[in-house]
Image 1 (tube, helix red, strand yellow):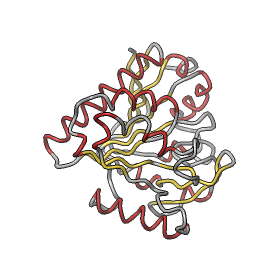
Image 2 (cartoon, helix red, strand yellow):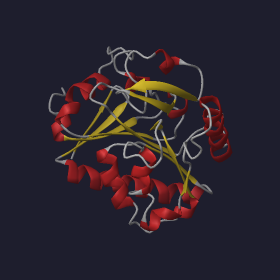
Image 3 (cartoon, helix red, strand yellow):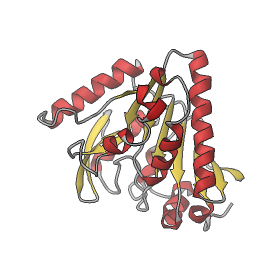
Amino acid sequence: MIEKVKNGYILKIYKDKLELSSAVLKFIESQIIHTLIKKDRFKFCVSGGSTPKSVYKLLANRDLRWDLVDVFLGDERCVDPSSELSNSLMLKNSLLTNFGSKAFFYEIFNNLKADDEATKNQFISKLFEKCGSNPPSFDLTLLGLGDDGHTASLFPYQKNNYVDDFVIFNEGKGLKRISLTPKVLSASSKIVFLVSGASKKIALERLLDEKEPPDRTPSKLIKSNNLISIFCDQESAKELEI
């Protein structure tokens, strides 16, 4: 593993996806254990995607205090929860199995008849109930990085990315989506980007570039007073000047 600090990020580069998944698993497990020594509950914001899914499957098999873990999605596609496109369904088939089934999970679209405003308000209400701060703050937020530079459902050149709110609706990759805003994601105690594959090389390079505009690379809208961790594999880090 290679570790470098650059422009507010701590970059951890692993040999391959397998080594990467194992390292992220150990990191999350450690965060849950150590946070629950000091706090009553662990507030965990998770992302969709194939790389996180492999981590979630491993994590669900760890015998932790899952009954004290609150799980929220950073974003979700506006689809039926039973759809293969649903991040909720992916979580139910990975993180929320075995030991992980004891965690509290907030499903954004459990009432498909609710309109956008009602869905948004319910989401915000549950965030305040579980997080108890303004803006709501998670103990750990796990984010992906799209090959176009998006994270959560903050897509390039979308005006909604800059709205002073906690939850927004956006369009991306041909689908309507609901997403937490940079305001909420940036308030997390620890923030981790999970990046793998050659298709992410340019996006990762741009994320680390101080001069890169957040309009083109919205993942740069996520800021923190602490170092933001990037767990990545060698394929995605190939072009980096480090």
